[in-house]
Amino acid sequence: MIKAKPLASISLDLDNQWSYMKIHGDEGWDKYPSYFSIFIPHVLDILDELELKITFFIVGKDTESEENRKYLRMITERGHEVGNHSYNHESWLQSYSYEEIEKEIIAAEEAIERATGQIPKGFRGPGFSWSVDLLKVLESRGYLYDASTLPTFLGPLARMYYFWKSDLSKEEKKARKELFGKYSEGFRRLKPYYWDLGNGKRLLEIPVTTMPVFKFPFHLSYLIYLSNISKGLMQIYLNIALFLCRITKTPVSFLLHPLDIIGGDQITKLAFFPGMNIESKRKIGIFKTVIKKLQKSFQITNSLDHFHRTQIVVRYTKKL
Image (tube, rainbow, N blue to C red):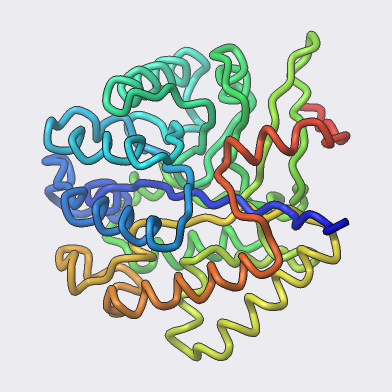
């Protein structure tokens, strides 16, 4: 009997041009400029070539444009899952009240369904933001899983670097003070687990996978950064991460962002972002290299399938 490969789900946070500008503190973000006409056909063709079906976490605000809706519909027409990534893509979502979170989730959920024809069953907070109230709202709305946690000790360092490179005011930095999470996030579990929400209610958490033991991130943004130093170093780093996932029996939840797959040669207005000096062709090559390594040892799927295959074997429950 052939032993089944462990799971590796792939998801993409579909952050649009305006959301990068907003987080960076750039003027003009509130005009909601979009690169969907360039990015979505581009990434869908690459995924078709690799025979991959993944999860796209969509921001509700992007459904307001008729032009955007045309491209968002292509995602489900090509067989991919869609998830909820909030309505306004504010990385301080954890500071909202229960009522504000509920309004944000419902608005995004309904907008995504109208645009794509699919009701989202999973959620990921912008900037890995989450809270107890958020989890309770998701459970009450019938969501099957949350995918907002990033178990790493490096969140504060990433935030410090991000603030250094941004043009944010003191007030904007204060609002984003928990962006990328606290140091304590590094103590969170890597394997999927249930949140115990009380009264017999629970919700499955599928964390974005970091390197077992060390908790260093290895999603595509980090790998592209390393490839800028040395492609060999990137491959060694990835090999170690995947080896540790295999020996610890940690299923992989692998994260993508649009700027991981498209470069400043195509999205010139975001050329200031880290990694945008790498042209799109090279980024696609790195992505394909990573996928081939994943396919060697893991069975690749989307986040919803990850939920269905995981829930029957999860034993650990995290009390709030």
